[in-house]
Image (cartoon, rainbow, N blue to C red; front, side, top):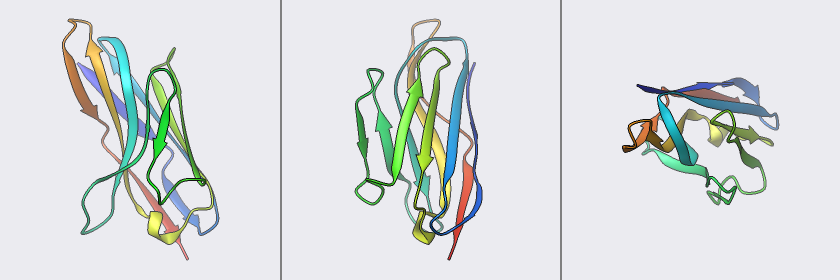
Length: 120
């Protein structure tokens, strides 16, 4: 079994910062791309940031210059540093990973989600 467990969400005032973390655990052979998505009430889930195993990144236009994604391959972790937060960043944030399990099968896995609320 594989699990992605997120942490670090919460309530913050506009202009503040939060750091999200996600750890993949279980029978994992290797983790490829990882990313963060978010879903606000009444909206579709959208990509926030993405990082390849080699560290190449891309961001949604709405978060460029404010959010930074990073990863630790040794611990199968991905982080999202969120600065200069805005009320429109309020959403449930989900961790995502494309990985190969120990039986060498490929799959895409999601965390359970963590709430981020930014007050004005």
